[in-house]
Image (tube, rainbow, N blue to C red; front, top):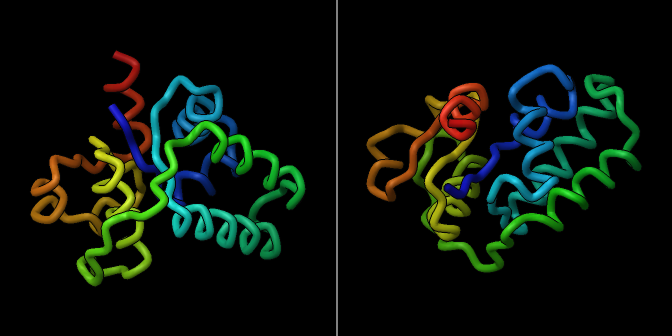
Length: 141
């Protein structure tokens, strides 16, 4: 199983240590969970994390977040030249997540915005879309 984490999962994992998102983030950084990242996805993670810090939503320093993201990227399979299929999804920022998943031969996209990744699109590529909690249940088994 290989996954792509949507940006909202990264934000959630940094916000609270008690949720499924944190557990997946921790598993990814420790190398227990196989996942992919493309340069565009990495830039989105960094931009949104810094935005949430500046807004006061995340109570973590930019330096610490940088270290966490560096650790996350160090363990990821990097998809340097993802297939570009834009525009496909209703939210254009989600196209890069789908492209990374397709190019990385992923089985799952983990997100809180499942409606942004319609089954009619993802099923063509053999990709399932799940929340962090849903994925954590099947991954642990």
